[in-house]
Length: 462
Image (cartoon, rainbow, N blue to C red):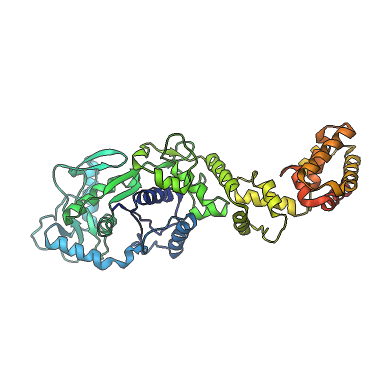
């Protein structure tokens, strides 16, 4: 059975690069009716954050990426790691190293002076002398001395690394705590992980983990290393570019479907298709279509996708979602008309909420720049005449089309350009010249509220 995993460290919030890795792993498991597991790598007791752990789980819940079984926590597995460390020691595949910090520093300086890559020289690998006093040893694993460490990467193809590049690395510190590459290999093997997908910043951890797998006789998983996500300038993604907490996207009004669709296409393709439902993602995802090249984060693309998913979201669901953004339409009989008028204009739920509030909240002030542009010498007379027309035609104004015809007839009768009424009318109704169509706005507000807002602007000008 195909079994994948995602293994974040709770030393910070889940960022979108991590979410993309998790998405690919999740999709491949679901594509194969396999398992997707979540492991929290919380062995760094000094830097762990319970809040970050909760945020990771919360992010998975928000985007709907369910994992199988309970989340596994490395901090609860130290007895297991010690068991395997003791086994390697007893089999002669690992050893105690008594090298002091001073000796390590001296060795490093000598190697750098010779322009060599700093690495442990194996001096305690087969040590049989008297152990130095006063030094708590670390445990090192015996790495292969000659040959190559090879594996076939699911994205990059065949990878060959000289064994000489991997020294006898530490698998347990002097206080007994195990190290990253050791516990990752142990956990992946014991959890039955068959496919390891992760960022290519982990590429040079893989040979070390293979050493652990081989020493313990575990079957190797298939490794796939994903190229990084860059900003639009081709540089490492920063918080300013979008490398922020996944839940910040929710707070900024993005829909989970849009974010997943966006991340799917950051390094994977299926022909020219851009829009993918979650079911399509599961059906079509193949790791062989993952790009070897870095992908480019494009906020405009994400906004375009988000606008698409907002338009496709049923109104009753939007009503519930908008409550998180200070808009409650659940008891408003006009909600269908309001959402019809605004959902085409909001790229995010924040923008949509703003558009709705422009309509349902009476303007308390007017945009100065728009006022200067919209208000002319004859504006008061034009607005008063249009307000009178609305009141005189009140009984016949029932739909947006009715209000549209009223505007057209007014412009034709007055022999004025549409901007003469359209611009000041928009300021009167919304406080600025942004927002939905005037006919839709007036239909939502009704004649009485529309004329009251017109009068309020006229009084303000006067």
